[in-house]
Length: 134
Image (cartoon, rainbow, N blue to C red; front, side, top):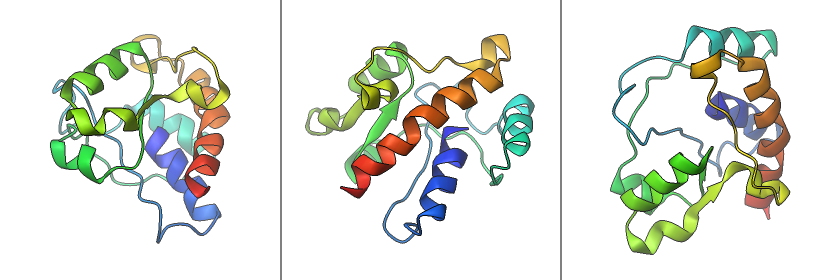
């Protein structure tokens, strides 16, 4: 959801040529899978363009190439910091840091509250985009 929503924001501001957005997994559980049907339904309901996507695990190259890596919850952050080369750990940020909050973006896979996750992402992603712009 976050990748598609952020790509929409980037596209709306005409920043496709300078900002690249890709999501990555920290575990191997969903590798190769397409987004959950509930996520797709929520994005369609909100008129977010659906892109072809399969889950991919984050790599050392991803850490090296990224300017910013946003994790959604404490476990994501812990996993990312463990996986990241030491020189890239400062690129890792919690999603709600954008609002100076310790809140987390809850994974809707467990409770199917895709509308809540959409609202949370809609709250933080525009702020991260502004940070990238500056």
